[in-house]
Length: 418
Image (cartoon, rainbow, N blue to C red; front, side, top):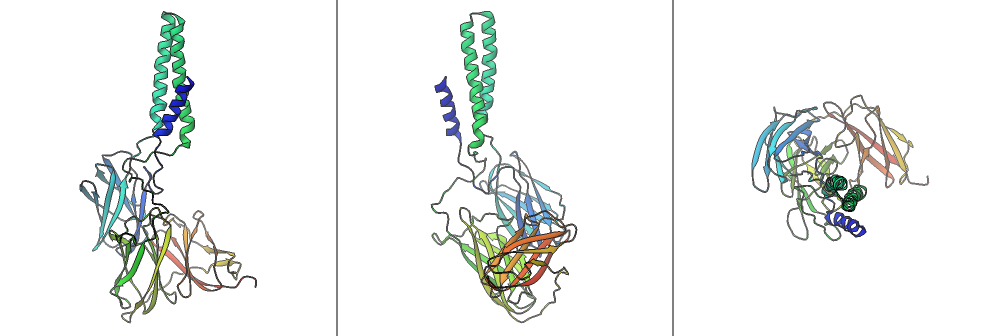
């Protein structure tokens, strides 16, 4: 009996598969922030429990989106089968159901105006725990043997009945052991998950080239900020970015004087290629900071600077918001500072957070991105330790019903010990 129980426990351990990658979860919604058609949206792909079956897609709008709707196309990478539909971007969107026939790698193409994004994702379905078979099978066999033992005991000698009862008890014991120990075992990967690949030491940072097209756009002229990602060891495009804070990449574009600020989320237009369209309002030097995270690697920050030439300057007005409160009023380098803002009613989460704080030093060599971790309310609070004394430019952001509010301010940081 003891040998049988030990064998059952070893079988449970042997059947456990390695844990899936940290960004792969069956049944969970996928969210991709995108800057498309001049507006910020978040594309939501709802988790599904069965395939073939419907996959529900919605587009949450944080700013008014030009055009009546966004065209959708889902393509299976493995067999090339496609299905199309449309979705209307709204603060509370209606979800469009598109039928998928299989699990595994897919691409979602979004088209709005003349802009197109292609988002890679996987259709995942939970295949169930490998211990379920032992749990339910053990209980089922135990029930059959228990009934058989009772009948045998009633009709024949008690010896065989006791044997059947003992085997029945073993089945119950195996099921109980699986129930107790299974939560401690790594879950099996869902159907459709990518093969587990472990790189010794993790994958290297992507080599990122950030440039504008045209190379020197004029003020008021639309231009494309492009990011090309290459693996330095293979020379191939890097196409394994992890969705972090609901985006493949976060790009912060600011003018040297801090009067221009954009927090955008570029479109994946090809493997290893990200693009976002912008329009700067005045000539001068600009900085671009791109936050990326490659699978099986850490986060990285790619930076560049570019020039905006003279042209048809446009006038922009910052949002009218109250000045933030700092504690201490004069921050000290290397020590935590609390930054508090008054927020209006109706603040809603954006990029998975209630609020965002972007901090840049004067020469653009440092960028910090901090989140408000609380719940929507009348006050937004951030905590940040400025690394060095000096003057910092800062922008606090939060979303309301129809727009993203940006509150710019400056902070003078003193040296520690004063």
